[in-house]
Length: 72
Image (cartoon, rainbow, N blue to C red; front, side, top):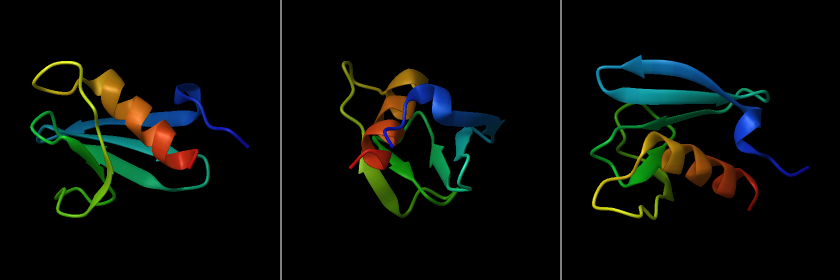
């Protein structure tokens, strides 16, 4: 199965950290200052790296990085 951005469930933002869940129950976190996606809210454990078009990644680029990671 291939994932798409529409398969992610955006849970909102807490203290600047954005959270997405998948239907299978996996959670992914991102903060605008991070160039990676994390599996914990602290961001210390990078799961996937974001390749931003500018100096800082966007929320859309973060979601795309999650999908890319899931489809590996």
